[in-house]
Length: 317
Image 1 (cartoon, rainbow, N blue to C red):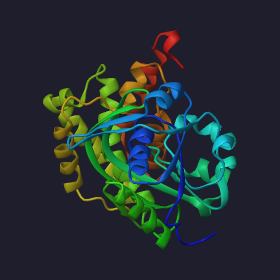
Image 2: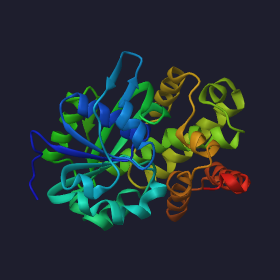
Image 3: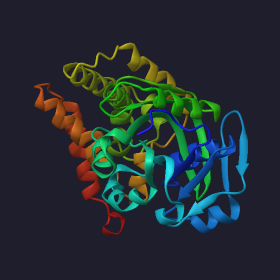
């Protein structure tokens, strides 16, 4: 495979949810050839394009290259996987038609162990992963609101950053997305869990609450911090020393989100599958494997599992 990324890449976005629409629209607006693989809402996106609203701007991507199948798109230079990890079983069918000799596959999925399913399909040497510190919501097909643009941190699967990693990061930067290439992707995954575990989890377990409610409740805020501390302790056992100041940064960022619905809460309310194992189950198992007790995380994992089981039959998709 080539070690460099082409100056004019052909990009495929697998999934037109909040992240796929937001980053795909930004990349297209910056002049890249971006193709969207859309499972639902394709007619609306073709007819009305993609609309993006951020604290600093609004823009409308009128012409969107939206496709129903990967075969319609064909091989690309960069494939960005923005579907939920719960849909990974379909990757064996979706990804092969998008792969050429030098294709890179970047997964934006949350949780631990999400690069492995991609690597099984396309080969680990192609795989990159990214952690998106962002607050973005899809309100309708092709309509997204970004409350907190944040940043993207990306790395290679099982390798330090390469020149191609920095080239991909530069492509995001040119599209108006703050992006950094990092050497330790696994550490980035643990860092993202510091926010995802408590806020996505408690939003569901506390009865369907938004982040402002969690931040305003002293008991929930304390539980958030304790959950964060358990993640830091587990990460340290795997050689990832995340400073405690990183927890404070998450509180600062969350305050700026206001009345924000974490993505897992939205999926839970709409009856969709959530990344139960990737965000809560796998961290529990990995912590136990190195002898780190995570009682609060384990309890949260089981509470979410019970909440999922208690959903009405029509909402257990």
